[in-house]
Image (cartoon, rainbow, N blue to C red; front, side):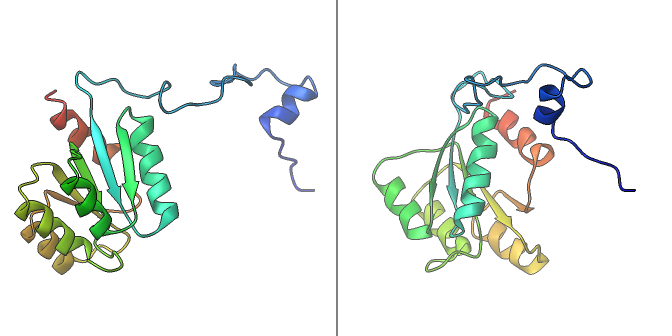
Length: 162
């Protein structure tokens, strides 16, 4: 007979084994604006540029959970428009495989505009040639998705002068 797996709420409802207190009890759900995993000396901001809405949502949620104020756009041209409009960011995460203007070209255009932000390429397909092209276009880092704390916390700490 296969074991029965119960969700924590099912165990609690049945008065079963003791479970630790919920991190976010009902009525106090997780809010990335107030519940963050890290605190920074300075206000950190990021822009996520990815044509895939699911990837944008994941990357934005990840950065927000680490205390970074994050905006997202779906194209390189939208990122350029936003920055031409006066927006500034400490960190810009770009998918090299954007529709329209590629992420590599977006990085190049941003650098030509004088953008000093840290620019990170984030791709599901790590190819050394693409990495070289991205870094040659002005990118600072190139990482493979999915990225996690081990990749971004050191970058965020550098941006925060820690």
